[in-house]
Length: 120
Image (cartoon, rainbow, N blue to C red):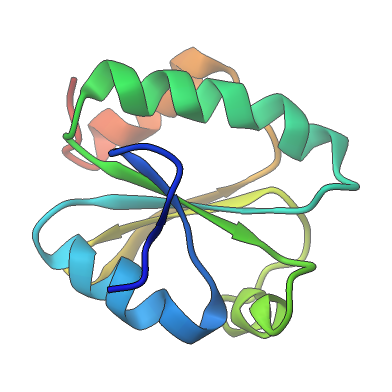
């Protein structure tokens, strides 16, 4: 695997490695995927919330980051029918089990995770 780790719970991924790093990994551990861009203020607001939650859950899920302006990553965003950013997808057992668009408060994200069986 060519995970570009930020730490043991957060990693950057790309179109080229998405199947292996996200879909395959999600077969054993849920993966929350944040599709973001530098020019996107709501993306900047959401990042610290997601990072705080992934660390609080301590391994119950992983956080993958996909920068949509990087290379072919916009094709990946198109594949998952994204119309705006940030868009966040939750992969469990190799499939998208949930998604949302735009920045959300921490309590909303925690509720979203719990609805999909990911608990602290």
